[in-house]
Image (tube, rainbow, N blue to C red; front, side, top):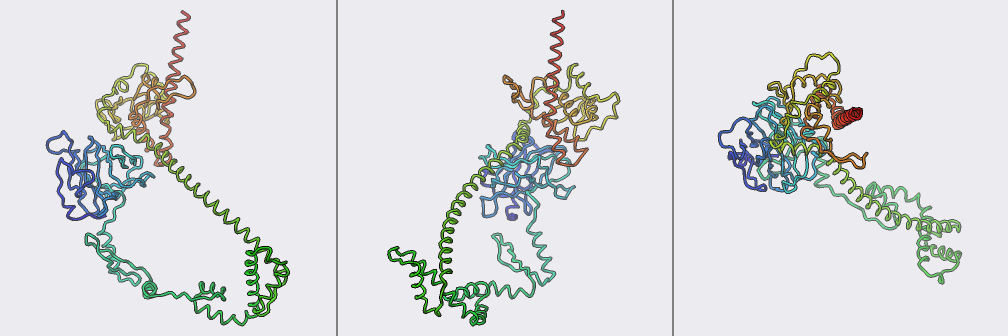
Length: 556
């Protein structure tokens, strides 16, 4: 997809955006996106967008939050209703900066992004195109944008000096195509022919390519432009010859007819007599019974009417057999036509039901799959509002009971291996480890957690570090009351953004052990189960403690 050179040379206005969503004049050129309340020189982290290059497409950028941007793509040339392609670059990034890009004006309701496809990305230090992980890509209908379909994808910049480029899929430019065709034309291959079919609206070549063997070029042109197919006129007296004309052509039929004419003289009379019997029978079926005599008389009348056909005679047994066969075939034909019509109506109804069912199944699957991801996106939009929640009293300074419980579960033996170095993804500061979203944990406990064996213990201990036992015993994973008890009261659900932190930590741990995406997804799907088991264990221990206190009190 190419853009007009005049549109590419458009200069961007720093700090302002083009007009409405529907009117987009051209591609952005070195467009610096600044926050609404910011005034001053741009600094690191204020992204610069650019699409003024061949096959580039990005018409407008809107700043939503510190880490979220709405992108508006330009429509196809002379076709404003089609908006699919995008291709742009981003620079002036900050290391470890996380962003969400929302392409908000797609024109297609159905897209391969719903089935696992992901946008392409490359950078100056990594020039090979790669796909963004599909778990970071969301395609959904957004009520904030006129209920249009929106494609959102999350990305983390890892190098400040790189320029990142994002595209709908692998770009293939017009210039690259012309270079390739020029290379083929210079080879002077006999089976390749390149011709100018016309020019586009923007005065670019439209090539016509012909690939065939040299001997077939002249024949191909004649068959397409000049050749005329003659259909011979057939008489009713030569039905078999008419079928042969369709298969072999006019000259073949004449030759076959001349060769077989003598050999068919003897059987021709019998064949014509059978046709006359059938015609006579049809005529008699339409007459009233009063005018119809016995079968013998009908047979005699038929034979008398055939005296002009080489005096051919049909035996009575053959006549009766033909009569019964003809009537049976007519009856069977009526039944078959009725059955076909009934079957056709049933198939049409089944096709409609199947289409509706398939649409419902796909919609339910999509909603079920995107439920958790959309929660994460919404929580990322809230941003600073989430950080107001009290995190440190729950995770950094646990009570003595919390410390005791964690030590009992995290210490798998009396010997501790050397602590695993903290990954570059997590930030160390004042003896604390930042897991993301304003969640800090003690560095020593973090190192002890890294040597824990098994996903179950790892997840349970990490949940205790983040929430604490006092919070976990009064919460549930989903916020839905259990069905095992009739009078069960639903408990408040755990914070979705903290659950996402647990999943990210477990994902980083599993990714060091295996690269199989299926195994990783299977192990990550058990996070809620592990946390639910931990909550049940805490509640059981609390109930046992209460029973011991009651027994003690009764003894006193």
